[in-house]
Length: 232
Image (cartoon, rainbow, N blue to C red):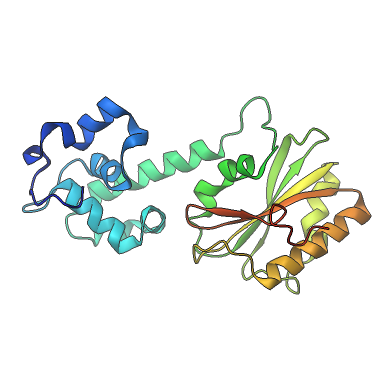
């Protein structure tokens, strides 16, 4: 959509307008800019909603950056006043709440992809490192998720006992550890690997299996177990 020089969505070919494309192809076929343009709804003089959406994505470095923007930051962007800022933040919050919903039947975490689907939407937008532990029963079904740490994560600063405290209280059979990289790059650091190794060894002593350690980045994640890092 960035190639259009039109100043109004109404000036675009009908088949290429975001709402018409959504109706014809479904929301999944639209780009981030087109989805934002639908939420924004209208542009300003000389700029279409699509232009405004592309400017926001460029300023934020992508959809995750837009998600992290405060209300005042959104209002400070050209063409985005309080009404549009409120619409954008409401849409982002709805998405976050939907991603956090737990079905009546607890989801089974059978793969790194299962875990990523559960946590990535929110965690990729966090501005600090957060470590969360997903507690599981004997069938790898989620019991609950707890946050155990916030800040710069490494084997020296994270107390391994805190990782397992809630797992012991919940009588969990296993757990999955997840943390985010605010930089957006989920590549494991040597400290991440050392921390994983320490948690796996502690889990063996406590008879609580560490199923995996995921690192969430911007639109991607890494499973340390899949890469053989820290797991023996």
